[in-house]
Image (cartoon, rainbow, N blue to C red; front, side):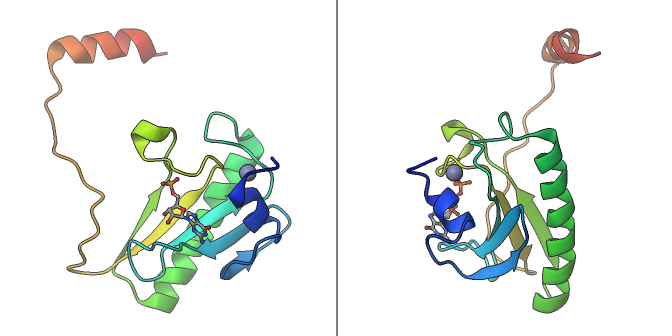
Length: 134
Ligand code: 5GP
Ligand code: ZN
């Protein structure tokens, strides 16, 4: 992808603070961190989102997320960890190159990754189960 900023960062054309790199991924610090250590896993091959990424790369990304979460928790002494991955504008995606947010959490921090719980009605439950249950 010619005009994709994360393609350029992942492949080293634009410098970024890199925590980890291998043949498939680069992990960088987010420029607008939600918390100290907020990082992004970027695949080097372009895929816009979860719908486009290959099964192989999705699996590798999750394994890397686990490794990074463990390493970062140890190094940064954080108290918890969010792994966030947005797809599409309504879901908060602003850069349309698949990425996973690695967000260290600290007791009492003000990071807002929460929602107001709704209610699962019988009608909606039935509708969704009809559409999705295999
Ligand atoms: P999204 O909202 O698409 O899930 O996340 C995009 C993230 O990329 C944001 O947290 C934003 O701060 C970060 N970001 C956007 N442009 C750059 C950049 O050029 N360099 C770095 N390191 N992070 C960026
Ligand atoms: Zn890209």
